[in-house]
Image (tube, rainbow, N blue to C red; front, side, top):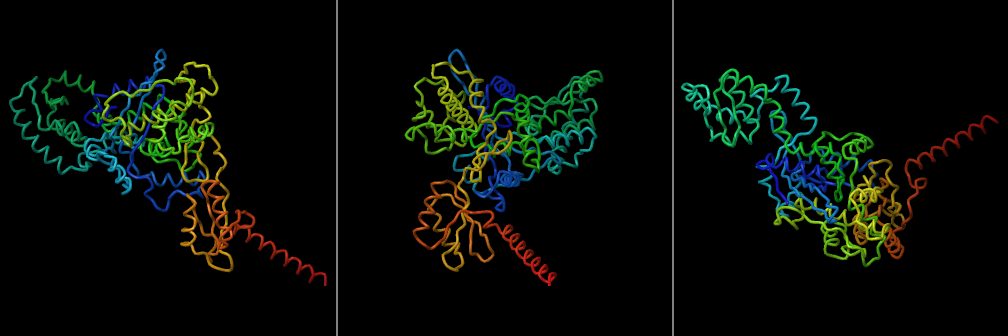
Length: 533
């Protein structure tokens, strides 16, 4: 594994690019600043897929990735062996003039990351910058039209003070410098490399005051006095605006590479990862749910969610050969060291991780989690293929992808009316239990505190009031086992009356319409009787 920040990104980019290009598929994972920062848009078992999308869209609008994990899985057919080259990227939004994001932090997210030893200093001091596609297009236009000035910078006061010092040094040197002379500005090298606003202002300052000086951003910032011919050649060969954009794009170059190559993406419980990627690297998510699906499949046509896949495949195995928990850590350990390693009689392909061994096993480090997601996918695909080809053959990565195609773009959804969404088309029907209507026995008001306490024994259950009199409530239950237990227990106590929800019997709109119909029918009959008399 390799941890990459702004100080190592540039020198490692070609290696990253080469490994992604050679990969058969890419494991991905994100750690982010907030999960559900807006309490009015909290997830619910009552949510339809469309409602859930709109809630998540609002929640991720101002959530940012802090760490992005990618693992490029390469395959050696002769050795039947996978190697995962894992990267953990520390990232942060770019800052330059009007490119200036605000975002949400959620206390629970901070505590969670801190508990897992997240390095916040590395993130914010050395994070790789990134911009969205919309921000990049806007910046290109403004730079091309010379609409950005030093006065637009966010820290112009500090930059101006620094440039005053530069001015004294350069002016003193320039008085005696001849063509070919150089000036080393070691004290300003680090800031020039890391502070893009300072870089822009420094460049403008030198161009405006010293027309025959060229800036060479070596390890030590270097100024060189050149003749007119060399100056023209350097101007032709270098595009400073493009250099600024390239610096601000940062991790966006990796994102663009993933989009252009269309490599299969493997994640675990991947919906939030996809939403946050699109929000931060494309721009605002589409307003329409169907347009989000189209955008997602256009950018990433193949996404596998190992949480969803395992949920479906586990039912093919006997009870004693199942993993009770479907979180990433439990599934990885189940398939690497537990019962899952030997689900088939055939020897499965070997899988190794490449890089810094000290980071191996550190869950919620995005690079390690990205490797785990890919590892689980390979084990699941092997198990599935062995059901169809029990002959001991070696399976190629393309066969894994074809064999798992029914799960392509099906992303797990937690606490919703459906257990996954289908980015390729129609979402599945709900497999949750029906809704139930609950009311107290006798002509009483429903005590919601008492009801909540009583329902807590039956797992994940949600309550929604149905009437302004608080005489009824709608109940959503996560699974049939809990629903049966709830009905059985409530029938024993005689305190509550529970019945399956019927749209015709229980919907206020339908009931109002029926009463309107009865009233209208009565009025019509009375009118006919009066007319006949």
